[in-house]
Image (cartoon, rainbow, N blue to C red; front, side, top):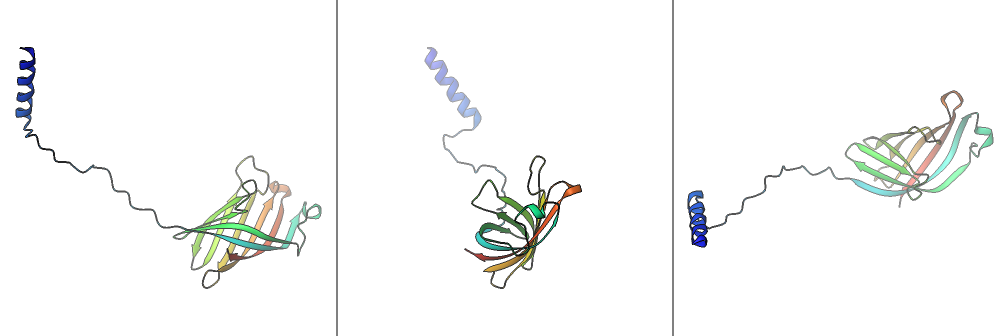
Length: 162
C-alpha cells in the first residue's frame, strides 16, 4: 500500500508541475566576455654601446664610454598602444620588465624598482621601430644607487628580430 501511495504522489506532483515528460535544454546564462585584444610577442637580439656614465660608481665599474654589450635577448610584447620589453629574457635572475606606450613606431617604457631591490633603481628605454619592424634602435638610461649618490648610465641599443 505504501508503494502505491508514493506512486500516486509522484504522478500528482508531475501533473501539477506541468511536466509533460519531455526535456528541452536551455542555454546557460553566463555573461559574454569580449575577447582580449591580440598581442604580438617576439624575441629580439640587441647590442648596446655605453654612451655615458655619471656619478660615484662610474670609475669602479665597466661602465666606460664605448664599452659594448652584445647578444642580449629581449622579449617585446605589443598590445594595441601598449608595449612591454623584457631585458635578458632568458635570465630570470637579471630580467627587467619595462612597460610603456607605443605610437606610430615610437615607444617609451620604464621600470621602477620595488622596495628591497638593489640594482638598478629605475630605468627608461625610448626608441623607434624601423619601417617593416625588423629592427629598432633605442636609448636606454639606468639609474643605480640612492638618490643622493646615484649613478646614471646611458646606452644606445640596436636590435634585430630573431
